[in-house]
Each structure stands twice: as C-alpha cells, then as structure tokens.
Length: 161
Image 1 (tube, rainbow, N blue to C red):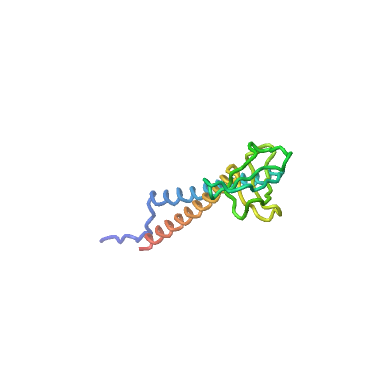
Image 2: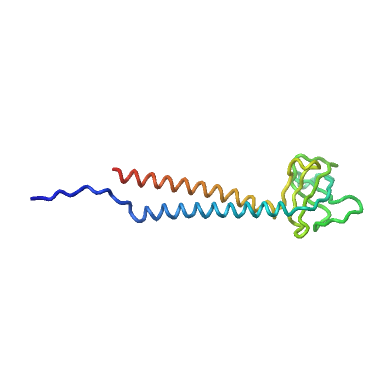
C-alpha cells in the first residue's frame, strides 16, 4: 500500500527571504537618513537669524549664469568671508537689492532672498547639501520599498503555483 503524500505549501527559500529583509532594511535606513538630513537642513536654515542687504552689481562676462552681489552698503562691514558673492541667482537684475540671511556663528551658511522675503533665490552649499541629500535618500527609500513589495509579490506568486 502506497502512502499518499500530503501536498504542503512550499516555503520560500532563505535567500528570497534574505533579499526581502535586506531591501526593506535598506529602505528604512534611507528613510531615517532622509529625516536626519531634513532636520539638519531645517536647523541650518533656521540658524540664519541675521541679515544684511546686498546689491547685484553686474553679471561677469566669463560666468554669464552667475551674478556678482556686493555685500552691505557703503560703510557696512561684511560679516561673511568676502565683500562679494558670485552666485547663481534667478530673477535678479543689475542694481536689485537682495537680502542675505546668514548664521552669525557660521557665516558660510547663508541664503539669499528677495527684499520682500517672498522667495528664496539661492542657498549656500553648506545649506543646500543636506537638502539635496534628503531628496536623494527619500527617493532611494521609496525605490527600495517598491523593490521589497515586488519581491514579496513574486515570492507569493511562486508559492501558489
């Protein structure tokens, strides 16, 4: 007499489970990295409590996409490392006044807005880097979550057949 084997649900291999765990872990890690970089960006931007007026003096011929901004008016000393900034600013013409918001403890952290503080026109590299990092981390996190879900879908499908 032959025994009939019971049909068992196939278990996913350890390698498949490991792939899902690794992609999900990486997604969570990227999400946490993005939150950390966002908080760093916000902290740096909020530390820019002092401001000084700058005047767009001209557009240098060699760097047509960049403007030269003279910091401060006559008689004012520049709290930044230089009296002039060469920055990529949109929406400003020669002779326009802009506000330069800077952190007194860290003068290389600054951002430039229009005189009415309506829009930010330029972020210094020390402020912009965490912002860019957070955008990348959030994108990587979303991608890895999608990969995890896709792997789970594939594993479940292979178990049903």
